[in-house]
Structures are given as C-alpha cells and as structure tokens.
Amino acid sequence: MTGYPALLLAGFGLGVSVAAPIGPIGTLVIREGLERGTVPALLIGLGAATVDFIYLALVYAGIAPLLVRLPVLMTLCYTGGALLLGQMAWGALRRAWSGALPAPATGRQTRNNFLHGFGLTLLNPGTIVSWLGLGGAFAGAYLTRTSIPVAAGVLVAVFAGSAAWFLTLAGVTGGVGRLAAGRAWVFRMVNLLAGLALSTYTGFFLLKALGRA
Image (cartoon, rainbow, N blue to C red; front, top):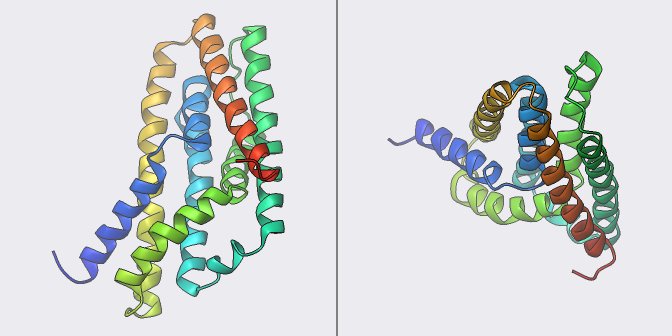
C-alpha cells in the first residue's frame, strides 16, 4: 500500500498506539463501561481522542514545542489535572464505600463524560510530551511534504484510530458490565480499584506540579 491510503493507515495506527496504554483515561473508560455501559464510557474516550487530534495539529503547526518551554504552564496543567483526577478518585472511592449499584447515566452525566475525557487529557502535560515525541517524528516523516488538505485527512485518521481503540475498550467493558448487573460487590471492587489507581495518578501529578518527580 502506497500513497495517501498508506498515510491514512499510518495515522490510524498512531492513534491506536497512543490511546492503547492504560493510564488515567483508560482507567476511567473501564470503570464507566463496567458501571454505566458502552456509550458513557466511549464519550470519555472521544474527549481524549479530540485532544489527541488537537495536539497533533499543534505539532504539525509547530506550536506544541513552545508549550513545553513554559514551566508555569506545565505546572498549572499538572495542578489542574491533579484536581480533576482527585475529584474522580474521591467519587470512585465513595461509591466503593457505599456499595450502591450504579444508576443509569443521565443526559447531563453523559455530556460531562466527554468533558472529563477532554479536560483530563488536555491538562496532562504527558500528553503534550508524548505527542512531541511520537507526533513530531510522525509529522517529520509523513506530513512535512504534504498539502494541508492531505495533512488534515491524516489528522482525522489519527483521531479515528484513537476513537476506535476507546470504542473497543468501551464495548468490551460495557458488555462485561451487563453480565455483572445486579452484583453490588463487583461494582464495589471496580470502584475501589479505579479509585486507588486514580489516587496514584493524582499523587504523581501533584509531585510533578511541585517539581519532585
């Protein structure tokens, strides 16, 4: 495969490879899929995939490297990310303690899921750094000699790859969640593990904000 289709496939693969490692977003997608189903979990992933698209576009435009040269901005991002993660960790641990079965997601909660995925990914300087590395190499290898419309198509392919991974993860966990419906101990354990994982990420972000990690 050569030419434009090969570029699109490469972009799709890049999106999958960036989304696949399980971090804060993956943890949230898994928990939400098990608790509330495929669509609420997918919206968290789509929020993250949207930021992936934005950051790669900034790398292509040559703007992203400027962001990491602003220590104050990185500190603010880590602080904001820690606050958001801490809020989510507290919510998960509180639900684990109560042992209540998850209620169906409302329209407002569903919209908030997208914003949570978007905001947490946007406030993670690690996302910027990873896109500077992977995205910079990718842009240098594939996008520097292409026209803007071609590059835009590849950026969309990156988004599609990231979204496809989160769709798969949300679909699998949503299916498992349906099988576990009515078993309060399963959801208590899911929230406990998610809360502990998110608390760990919160601590890491705080250490980064303080310049100690």
